[in-house]
Length: 366
Picture (cartoon, rainbow, N blue to C red):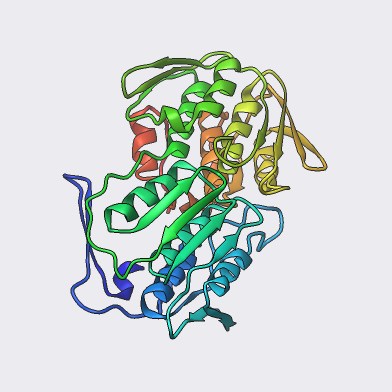
């Protein structure tokens, strides 16, 4: 998307470094014909903040409920309008303009939304005056974004989960930044090791970002051994889980499908409530095709674990559902075929290669 707008992006496999530069001016219309993802919303906020206008494809990405279109973009429209932009949909495009620039204001988020918090911060950096984001989602990725923007010259102060204050600046400059480890990927390999009975060492493990999930998993029988910067996971008998998802430092909603596979392997009844995306249990129907016994009671997902799983043809409804099905396939009898498995590659770097290196029989289909 950045290259489409006019940036140059050069990635070095050797150094694992991405260099982003701007050789000339950027366009403000994102002519994007690949799969649409929710990052387009952040592109729109950045374009309007810098150029006073922008247009992007309507956001796609994860449909994480049982109904298509479960995730709207009303919060993003609201925050841009609060900053003084005019926002409208035009066919398959979302457009915004602020000919005189954005103006800082108070933005009250009704829920702790990651994307809306990010967009408010990004847009506020170049708005005139002060932007205060109330009820932000303070998760590690947000803190990392703040660190990056501060390195570029932004003036941002975080007051915990109460508010984030952004003082607008004229422009942002260049920076060198090291991205934090992906805590959901770290949890993925942790759960994979636990349910397969393997022993895996995960390097650069983000302990501080996974305190709550680690407590639940340790108490549920997973043997964890902490090193200076790594974590060794030894598979063992799994016991049931009872969890509810919520804003950080709680258990992220993205972690729920992974922990559901853990529950399917555990002997006993596991219970899950998703407080962020009620009804995010569409993946459970796909796991049921592999033999997972479950039922729902309102917003409660109940899994009767300890039953053998078997291979089946299933579909990745979203990114985390896809990787959960892949983990289930690793312990199922027979072959599992995951349709729409491209979802997995959206959030995991070299997933098949890493899984294969750990001894799993996983490959991309034709």
